[in-house]
Amino acid sequence: MQVDIDTVTVELSGTRVVEDVSLRAGSGQVVGLVGPNGSGKSTLLRCVYRALRPTAGAVRLGGDDLLTMSTRESARRLAALPQEAVAEFDFTVAEVVAMGRLPHQGAVARETDEDRRTCAAALEGVGAGHLADRGFLTLSGGEKQRVLIARALAQQPRVLVLDEPTNHLDIAQQLEVLSLVRGSGLTVLTALHDLNLAALHCDLLHVIDGGRIVASGDPHDVLTPVLLADVFGVRAHRVPHPETGAVQLLFDRLPSP
Image (cartoon, rainbow, N blue to C red; front, side, top):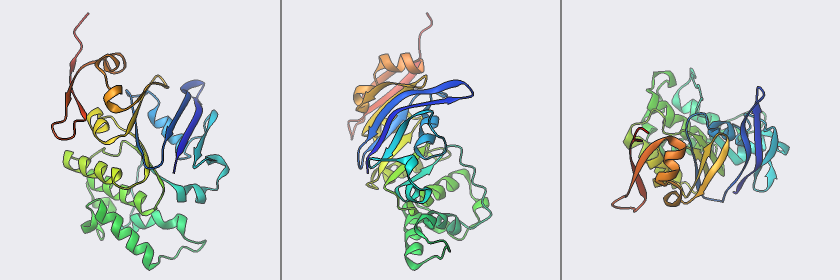
């Protein structure tokens, strides 16, 4: 399913934090948002998963305006894992993941065999099947993150919005989760801090600075030393990944003027 962000502007407390942003995530694409802290990435994503209403512009899923849909319909099309998700559930892991099935159930939620199979597959897919009977509050930060990703996948959306999905994960888990997301066949819109992970796993990158998109395109074309110096204030050295050929970056401080 295609996602279109059409000239979205967001003002918060009189400050314009996102300004006239337009981008498209084609069906099945993994599209990354990168930029320094406070650049507007999370604010933009909050508009996509309906946590925030844009001041101007529109978000469309499959050509339909997001704000004209019922919350149930949008939840059937799109699942999200916000960066600020505080999920201190006093439930088992299996119960947390089962929450992802609610958009597919009737007014009186009753778990079916299909729901249980879907949830079990989602947990296994993120390498957390062995945690099903554990209490969510007993998990480490990385384990909680994997369970929340499993909950989003159990929702069986066509679009997945992830704001820093690799938070709290070690490097092996980061690679596993992003490979899983990439192999899901879903349309994915994600904000990432790690530029090397973004270059490796995204089909398309948008660089956001000061609430505006300042560069868009293939990661190899976008992540140039000049742009990284201007936007992130670092000196970057580009090297090809020895197996994939994807651009990888080594950083050091810019020399003093």
